[in-house]
Image (cartoon, rainbow, N blue to C red; front, side):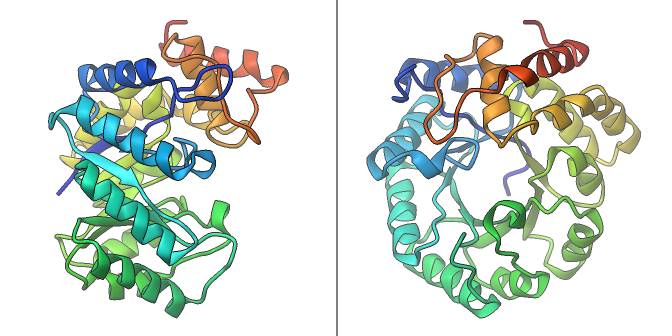
Length: 292
């Protein structure tokens, strides 16, 4: 089981929007050095929506090659077309990813039965551990706990990233699934609370710029040291909030740029963080102990 702080890695880009391969390697090494427990490549934060198929697969391949088995690599391979999700998942397996992260089908708003059959089809088509991803605030598609429980019976569906921010709902789900089915938080603000309640990790945006603190909080929370986990988390609570001043990954890419971790490049239709929010985010970073 993959556990701990799993960074939802940004995809560094040049000013023209092309992928910056050198900075991508540097980011991987930075996270391993800082104690991040695993990397999620080309998820929402990695701008999966605007990378084409070849770029998507190439980023996964590069991250896997750079990691060299030191920590797990989870590849974002979800799509609102079952056929496309299967194809991306096959590519991730061929690239050597340890698992895949599959978001609920966005925009077309399938029924619960449609979601069940979608994920079942992907699991049957590609023999690789698969983590479901529910983020209704972005997809307009909310997978119920009952549907997750049904899917958890499929052998290679091994977990769920719960980005609802609803801790009681997540806690209820933890009580409904078997112990070998992992629930992960996908909401930094409530992640420590969900891990204290039994979640196995945090797929984190904040970990891009505060990897050591996020990893430490996860270690404490998962091991039952609730007060220590909360003490670490409170130091970066303001950061959690300010990284969503505009749509993710706009603020976190700007923050990483200010830290020298990548260039300012971001791909349309996303744009660099609006000028009006920059000083607010930078102030939150400084108060969280991040050097600029």
